[in-house]
Image 1 (cartoon, each protein chain N blue to C red):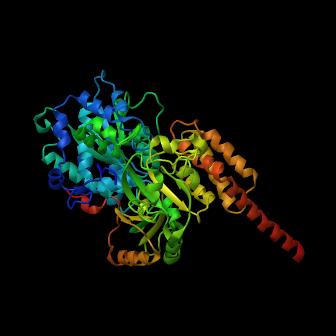
Image 2 (cartoon, each protein chain N blue to C red):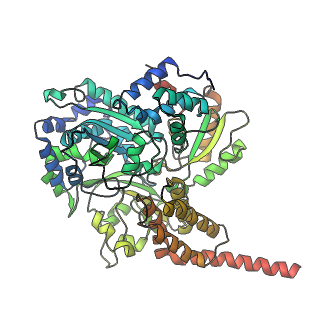
Length: 179
Length: 443
């Protein structure tokens, strides 16, 4: 199926810079970083069209992209809200009250883990250890870590996002995609 | 107060910039190395006794000496910055504040290994650190420490950062290599070891961030001097990530050999248990290592005080000891249910199993389900033996150590806290009995 999806000129420049870091013939190595770029460029998730597009850039089979994209937890396989709240639920964060954080968010946003608010603003996800155990409990949004979380802090964080975020926030922050 | 090497300058304002880092003596080890023969650099690292800081503790100099020198294929150095062992956050802290220190270590180590291309594989969640490293690398190129003919020595090196995308298994070195090749992070069968056939089937060394970061200090002070820090075969300093119920969580650099009691209770380090609670148990080296009850952690089975060293923490084997692991120090106070904590860890390993080996793929899920029914009020006494049986059939039967890492927490929790499992199951049985009697009465 033909698709009109393509990277912005800036993203394409970044993509080619990344591809040039691997020896000739080994361009498939650029797959993970390019999927991060694609997720940033195409609304925070990887549609089949987005994955096919990346396969085309790297000159590999679409299935080589699908099998990789579904293996790694950071790639979203369905549409998400503008802010994806990724709450760590592993060991040390659990010890420090991550369960309460998740419950509080579920109540406040009126969604369950894995769901998106009706206004398309927030998606709630639980993730595994974010390497910030000393400042647990922790939540990641895009490239930002929110540490030593409390319910009070969450209120402020959520209202800040609600008031300021217009474009979807991605792990590969848009500010880094410029040539 | 121990010797600070890695974190000496971490609080200097602007230390993440080239100018400040250089002013503080940064890149001196590169100047020194470039005047030496690569093999002599390897020799210094061997003399230092440095052991891999990612978890396995394998001697770094020996790992380097395995690299295949006869092949016409290029050599690669890959830095493992896929820090994802629960309880461990030292590498994130280090890279974020001292990116140039990692770049410096990568240059010296690449020179020793005759590698002309090197990668830092950083976990995808740390994309913000990816950009910090990219900036440091760009500054290093500008200053002539990377690229062609570095400082007129004739040595060429290109250094790149590569992001992962969320997978614990990519911290295993062959899983990491697969991932760096743009594939699923399925670990490879060994042999061949990466030093013979690694990245793109070329000789490759994979080292942890902290290991690479120690190399400049070894060169600057000399391997023999470095080996004087520490105790026995645990030489040098180690970064410990302290978390859980301690007063002062954070990353600490200690001289190996520090008494564990001092590390846990002195105000210079963890400051003891918070909120006046009692110390119950600890997972001292990241989630994979055996859990120990407080008494067995502070003193070994012979009653001798334990030290923060590879040997002392492992004293007593798995019967009464644990492991240094990655230095992820997860402290639990008296309020923690060991069974519920174990359920959390086991759920993690099930989630992170790559699925190649049946014992791990099926076994981790099985253990998760059994533990879930125990904490959910449906456990049976026979479940404890079932868990023991399943974990014993995972350990040692998988391609990579994720299977072991999932089995050890279960084995050690049962070994040291069997009573807690029994009490939990009994208490739930009592509730069920009461409910049943009430039903009979009201019927």
